[in-house]
Length: 283
Image (cartoon, rainbow, N blue to C red):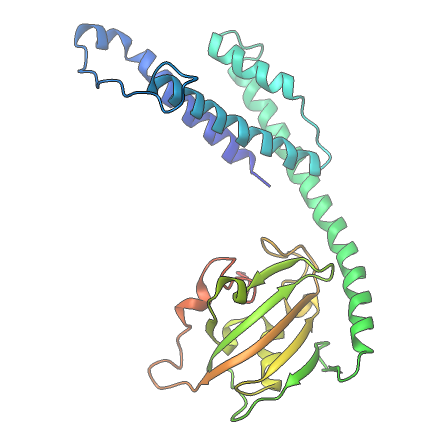
């Protein structure tokens, strides 16, 4: 969800960018700055580059606001697009129907509504996801070869591998695919073409525990309950109370050394889409 602060910040930035030249008009007349030669427009629909740039700026702002309206609708808040456009036009014309104080008060009230609606939706989604996750786990538990640990982790070893079982302080190299119970893929190292390397105790509990059931060269399927993943809050791309399914291939195990024993590999600290789907959530 796009935050209200981002929306208002963009509006403020736009206002500064567009209105600053007007505030400096008097000085500009007295000492005009040298102008840059106009370049030919890149699109025949515009007479010059300034026109095209202005249109691009407006189109970018319009797309941003359109996406923001859609996000609000997901929360049950349906804003009137015609009034949004009217507000922009009136502001440019200096004919706002609201005073600065009324605008501030209205936006503060709106922000409160958004936060309340977002919290309600998160709680609703968490309850629904918990039910769906439990149903999926119960079905998976009945499959041949599936085992359940005391923590609630479900796993099925597809290939045991050879060598030593990884320890918490070891660095492991894996390929994996992560999905939600509805089949949505939220992370896939195979698609990226880049295995992930991390210290075993730097990731979500379901992984730290699960990978100890295979060795180098092994393959395992993990069904991780929310309390061993991201719990009631979730993370970007992973809704609250989600049960996660991972198919993991353990490519290598690198024992800890005196130099690396207390360090977490850089690759395990990267943003979502690379490894945040398995790294521990920030407290």
